[in-house]
View 1 (spheres, rainbow, N blue to C red):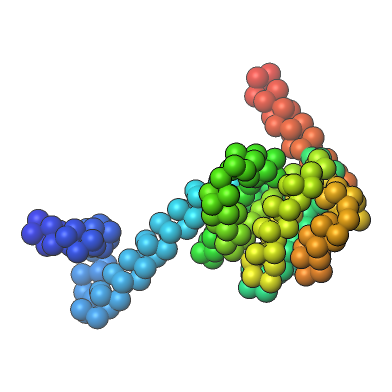
View 2: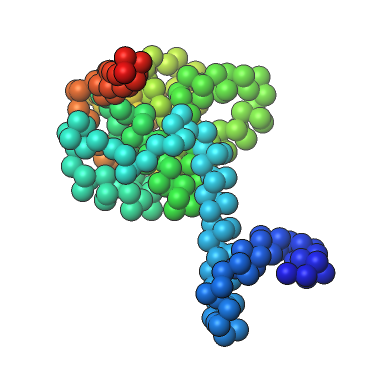
Length: 255
């Protein structure tokens, strides 16, 4: 590609197209293609390049605990879950329907990894996702407590994510004041956006952990009735995988 053409593409903010053209110029198989065929290949590559860049940004901005998690790497046998269940969830129909997911179970059951894998798949389908631990979310809300305008703006931003992954959900009881903020958040998200709740406590204990009373009733009403609970195993997957990693290290050291 000549320098002038490259410069013009850059001025048009098409430097990514220039890069693709340069790459295709190295492919001898493209020499005999007609203009339309070559243009079609260029445009397909450009669309793919921009989509990959978008997906990369979405994954980075989601702040996943496990940014390399994938549905393909799940051990379905250890998790005692049907592969078809996960594949159906991977279509992201639950996001289209604003349905919530519950991933509940004991520590070490691989709940967070599964939630991140689903979140990354959502990013691949260009949904806006945020992963956050509930303690971190509540600390952020607390830091804005004296600035109602900033607090409201932040709550609305969290509420607008198409998929919110809320880890360590209700691992500790929350105050009445915190319950009011949680209510406002899920009042905004209810019927509009999906949330994946990741925690250790079963649904029938949530009401008490939300402080009880009508406030807890209102929160539960906006969370529970349009939700699907993903089955989880009692197996401590962290212990299994850590043991395997340790054994692999020992085997390497003792060779």
